[in-house]
Image (cartoon, rainbow, N blue to C red):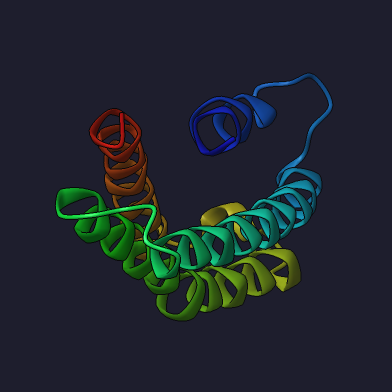
Length: 125
């Protein structure tokens, strides 16, 4: 899901004919909110699996890292991105606002999360 939404859907959305910046941002907000809800539910499942002893050693550390990365996104980065989206949507010409470093941070954390989850999937076999 993370790869499909963050690294495929999100960048391509703005290249589709007729998708304006406000429309793309509105769609992005809805899609990422839904993704984050699903990720949070799955994170609870991972915590339960760890608590029941289904993971050990490296896998436990990777689960912890994935959870920390998700929390960083939800608590530290997403609110900044939401404020930026509000500014873009409310600006007469939102495209003229400077680029957001929070967006780069979100993508970097997302990439780390994907690598962590892939390694976790391999390590848990």
